[in-house]
Image (tube, rainbow, N blue to C red; front, side, top):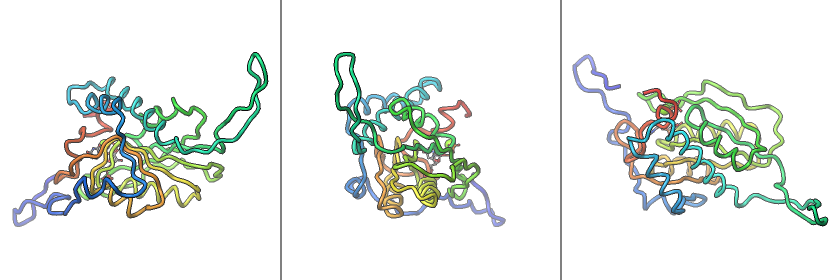
Amino acid sequence: MLGTSPQGDRAKLPMQGIPQPTREEVMKLPRVHISTHPVMAHKMTLLRNKNTPTPQFYQLVQEIGALLAYEATASLTLEKCSIETPLQPMAGYSLAGGIGVTPILRAGLGLAEGFRQVIPDVQVWHLGLRRDEETLKALEYYNRLPHHVDLQVVYAVDPMLATGGSAIDAINILKRRGIPRLSYLGIIAAPYGLMRLSQAHPDINIYVAALDEALNDNGYIIPGLGDAGDRQFGTF
Ligand SMILES: O=P(O)(O)OC[C@H]1O[C@H](OP(=O)(O)OP(=O)(O)O)[C@H](O)[C@@H]1O
Ligand SMILES: O=c1cc[nH]c(=O)[nH]1
Ligand SMILES: [Mg+2]
């Protein structure tokens, strides 16, 4: 919220005057994957449209989550297994090791559902982070990460990578649990948040559906899609 000082001056907005990198400066960062799939571009346009109603928006977030999961899991390792088809035995493959998905509440919930449509056999580790809209700092309010970790990889999922504060904190929290391999999946990144996440955690892979222009003075991604949590859950 905009405030006024006792002298009557307008308080500074949180991103006002903060330099931001351009799209071109961040799109070549290592381990950053920006989707180029035409189906993704089609769904993204439907998602961004301000006239898309909540039920369709939530459905689209899940569909985009499934597409992102498909792209992000392309490098997972396989192990051989033996099965029998109705006709004969054969050697097949199964994904090696356990997989986890961490929705960053609330807005990550729809993405996690989409991820589970691609790989149903995942552990879901819920983590609640809420961005303080005045300071843009993330506050942790819920944590159901198990103490016993037997996963090969965890995907932190959250639609919006704005200042990057929530994503950086989420990855820090997951790293403290000793996950050997971590990735971040998001729908839209701002160059500023993408650069900060990549610098804070150069060892993780980052998958996003789109890279937008900038953050506005309030820390919202432009052109963006508005508030991803409110649009999924109808809380305007
Ligand atoms: O990169 P950042 O500047 O940290 O901003 C991004 C965060 O803000 C949004 O969540 P929000 O705090 O609105 O919570 P919500 O999911 O409950 O709507 C979004 O889903 C991210 O978690
Ligand atoms: O543009 C933004 C920034 C943060 N959170 C959102 O939901 N949207
Ligand atoms: Mg929100």
